[in-house]
Image (tube, one colour):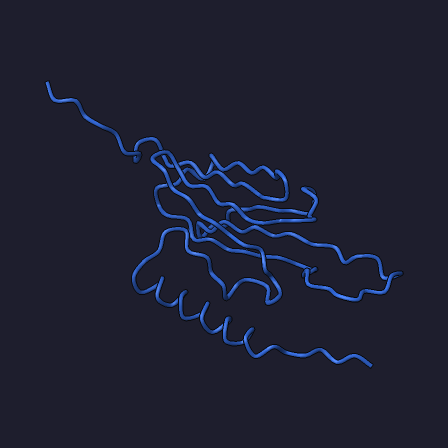
Length: 146
C-alpha cells in the first residue's frame, strides 16, 4: 500500500506565499497573484511583464491542450486562469513521476488602468501568453514643448 508523503517544504512554501500575498496587500502590488486561491499542487511558473501599452502574463502550461484552459475576468476585476492537466494512462507502471496533474487555478488582481475588453490569450510551445492592454487614455505619452 502506498501512502502519500507530505513534504514539509511544501507547507513552508505555502506559508511563504501567504506572507508574500499579505505584504502585497499592505504595500500594493501590480497584478499580484493570490496564492491562497491557487490549487495546492499547482506548479505552473508565472512571469508578469509590463510596458507602456499593457501587461503580459506568461504561464507554463506544458502538456495542456488549449481547450483545457479557461480565462475569465470577474466583477472584482480579477483575471482567473483555470486549466486541467490530465493524468497519464493508468495502464503503465510509473517508476518516477515529477509532473503534477489535475486542476490549476491562478487569480490575478488587475490594476485599474487595464482595458477589460482588450485581453487576449495564446498557447504557444507549452507557454500561455496573456496580453492585457492598458486603457489608451491612461497610457504614458510624451508631450512636445513648442
